Each structure stands twice: as structure tokens, then as C-alpha cells.
Length: 317
Image (cartoon, rainbow, N blue to C red; front, side, top):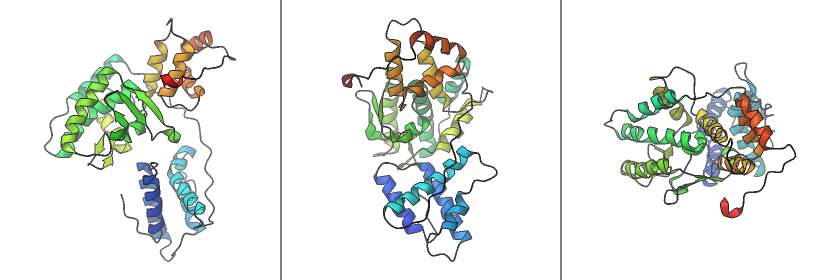
């Protein structure tokens, strides 16, 4: 954790502690809060307290930003101010959050050769002499196979605590998710075996670790670490643009494609997939039909507009 240097340091440390003990801390907050702290220290060195101009000058949208990137940068500051307001510490106004823009990026459609090339590269990482290099060699093949085989978000995998991975029953308890919506993911046999083997091996390097995929022992992997290592493995033999999150899209589409002419209830499977992927609404799952043109016809053939999606029985969830 970076050390805060401005007069706001005590309040920032209180906020960080609150988020951590409540299980709502995100690594991305550390960067934003650290930069905000440096901004306050360098631009307003004589100010002993938080002022509106500090917030406004930092949270103003920049020419190089779109709405979404601006939202990501200033949201931790917005949350920090809300924390102070609820405790009567400040009456400074929170910044106006830019309107969220829809993601227009088309996920990469993996080919079998691309996937084979990628996982071959993951399995061919040379042995390292340091603990971090040994951990990287163990982590990369398992982490990316988990993303590919389960559809979990990259953030969910990074923040997965060891205590929330029930490897005896093959169930992951996803506590830290988009919108903090808790859900459960059942692992298939092959990834479960890999995760069991990994758990034993990584424990030799980092005993009593907090996160299932540790970074330096007590911390979790960072988003930049995941992206950087994905690119290193991907571009060894592949040339198309792809990112780790594309595994999640691939998981959804491959599942939906496999249901055609399946005797099991189509709407039931759609709901189970939605719950497993941690979607708050069924509409989020239906989004994947727009990625492949022919899937729209499959959806229309199986689901009426007025058909109600059934609830998942408690015993099944």
C-alpha cells in the first residue's frame, strides 16, 4: 500500500482500512487515491484540510479521457467523499459522475489454433530462480485456464480468497464481484484438479496466503500483471488483438451455442448461466446473442417476448 503524503493522509488511511475490513477494497483504488493525494500535496501544499477546489480540479474530465475512463479514475474519490460525508467529516460536494458509455468493443472470437498456441506458451514458461518467478510459472497456466473454463471475471479471479475456494466440492464463492454481487461458480473436473495441484504447490512458496492467486505473498495479482502476462503468452504465436476478458465472452457464447437442439429447457439453462456468471439481470446474459448474428434467431425460436424466466430452486443454486 502506498503511503499518503498530503494532509489528507489520516482520512485516506481510515477510508482504506474501512474498505479493507468490509471486504470492499479494490486494488485499482490504490492508484487513484495515491494520485489524488499527490495532486493535493503538490497543487495545494499550504492547505491543511480538504477543500472543494481540490476535488473539482482533480475530478474534471480531461481531454484525453472518455466518459468511462474518467469514471474509473474519479470513482474512488467519489466513494472517499461519501465515506467522509456519512461520518459528518465534510460537507464538500461529490463530483458529478460522467454518464456511462456502452462498450462498443467486439470481443475476440478465439480459434482452436489460437487457444492451443496460447496455452502451449503458458505451459512452456522456463523455471525461475526467485520465488516470484516460480510463482509466475505456477500461476499463469492455472489462472488463464480458470478464466477460459469458468467465465469468471478477471477481477473475480484476482480477488478470489483462498478461503472462498472450496476445492473439496469444486465450488468458488465469488464475494468480490461487479457491484459486489455474490455468486457461486462450480468448477469442471479438469480445472478443479489443476487448482488442487496449484494450491499445494503455491503453498510451499507462500504459506498462509490470503488470496488464491497471490502476488508477493499477502497481496493479490494486479490487473496490469494479468494483462501484461496475457499479452506475453498470446503474442508468442498469435497476432490478432485479444484481452483476458475475452475468455468470459467466449465461455458464454460456447455455452449458448451448445444448447441448440438440446432437450433440456433452454430458458432454464439461460438462467443457470446468468447466475453462474454473476449477472444481475437476464438481459445481461442475452447480450451475448448480439455478438453472433445467427444467435438472435436461436433466441427468438426458444424464448417468447412475454415468457417469464423461472426462479432457480434454492436446492439447485
